[in-house]
Length: 257
Image (cartoon, rainbow, N blue to C red):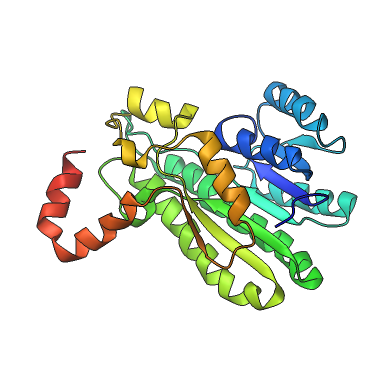
């Protein structure tokens, strides 16, 4: 995809992979709207993006308010006449909790990790299908397809997002719209580092570690590619096979992580 002149919305844009993707899209010539909760960080991002893309900007939104996110997308589409690219990068959870899980905490994880990006897709897809052009990439996790011990609600939310995205992809591909699920490996973002330092996660092996630059470059190259999955690391692809072929050994290994 030639990103020049495209209108892109990137959630989770105040830090980590979301920020990197928003900045890289702007450098590639797209008009980028960064979305996150922390306005001070978004202002700094907007200043950086406008050096390459003067019309880029930001919107403050907490994705736990799904209605507000849907309204934001509708306003961006109205303002720019279209949304060509939607990158749902924002996420919460993934850290082993020390306090009890409650229905409220489960709901909060599902709202941000699944309901908001799914509702966002359903909001922009009619316009993309009408124009017969568009791409959406949703940030998932290797825990979605091979969950280990820890935050089950996080794994479930990401698995739900992967499944919903794949299901929708069959409907929209004939209209020239491509949906992707991104499996980034382990990246030293704030969330990734917190999972290791505070969440009880062991440092992943080098084979699954990736930098923000590597993941962003891969995602931008693959947007609009016929391949549904964007896998930053190959090793995690082995886990679902092991779970099927040698289930006892697989579960013993995962329990040690």
